[in-house]
Length: 385
Image (cartoon, rainbow, N blue to C red):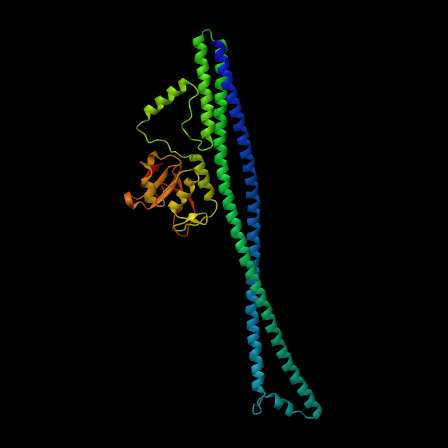
């Protein structure tokens, strides 16, 4: 029996080593993907910054061109008025007319000279007016080109901002996946250690009963590895993993009995939920009534979006979401729970509790997704999913 026990333990330990190797490899791959996304985020943030600078320059040039056009309009108006005055002065009966200026010449030579002078003045004024009008047309075209370039830059900036937001979501998903894989790896390491310890106990067992008992403990450890590897990647808080020893199972049963009156822990990975919600507060996402995407959220659209990334389907409205939760006092809220304002069908607002009296929500028109404080605006109750 002792030899059979050792054989059983050897098989179980081999399984533990295999799962541990898979968990380690998966965690390394996810870390590589996470590093790549972080690099893309840094690159995109640089482009966003450069785009803002470029847009600022274009808008500055556009404002300068508008000022130059306004100045030219004034000059053209003044020049046109001057030419109109000269035209009026050319009337024969006008005491100050140009014709009288020429007619009062003392000689033919002087008359010719005065005629040339008048013609030169008129031609110069006409040419100046024509030049100013041409300059105005050039500036108007320049302003049109600048406006087109600014609109193009605005579009590019918006696309870059959207790309940055999408990358932030990828980063949060990968961080959640990495955390889950790290937990699975930790469980596999613990199970491997338990199997190794059981192997030592089998080897040192003085009776077949002791050897069989140690072998059964090793088998339980291997079952724990299998359960952890199957469930860890889906939800790092999955409570269905087997205990590695009968003592741990007894302890878990005792804890369950002592806390049976309290609401069950949240069924979602609160750390991942909070990581994603926090990233959204840094994206300047506006409040949009009925909004459910990164271009804009309302309160329930935000919670629906965040929890949906972790396999929890929430209803569309705050009142309907409240009905999906187990109601608890705000004082008992834990990070990852929902906070609600209003009662019954009159629930009108929802937020994600982050702990320490703070929450994340999409407040109202004109504001962005941001943090709020219970002391500043107290919710009516909390809800646990």
